[in-house]
Length: 145
Image (cartoon, rainbow, N blue to C red; front, top):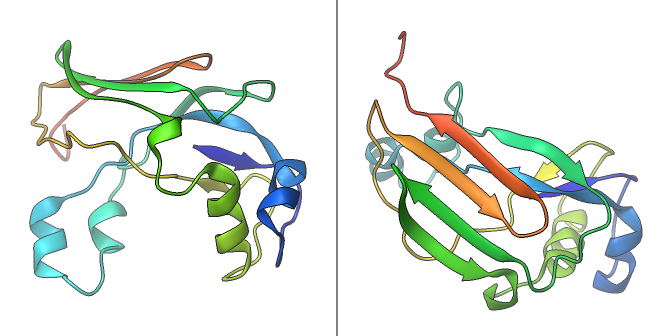
């Protein structure tokens, strides 16, 4: 996940690094049942309370171009890739979005997810780990629990 440090509007990929404060882990949770119902509007499936945890901190010194990414569910690896495998690198993502909307300091951008997306259930523990940044660990609970 990219965290903006400076306002960005209509910037090039080469300018993007100067607008980024740092990087952190993010768990991009989606309600696939809702996503299938709202085929044209995926935003609702990602917008429920607790669906976008981030952290545990922001690293401003890490190089985002070749970081290993792993997601584990109950200790089992479900995703394992590197940022070098991304279709668009973080600078291209920031540049593209800056042409759609004004990015403000503190804005967070999920940059995509490797293959291996899987269903999670109440009681599961999800760990998102990014080399050089750390791990974000979340326990899945049922709504209202």
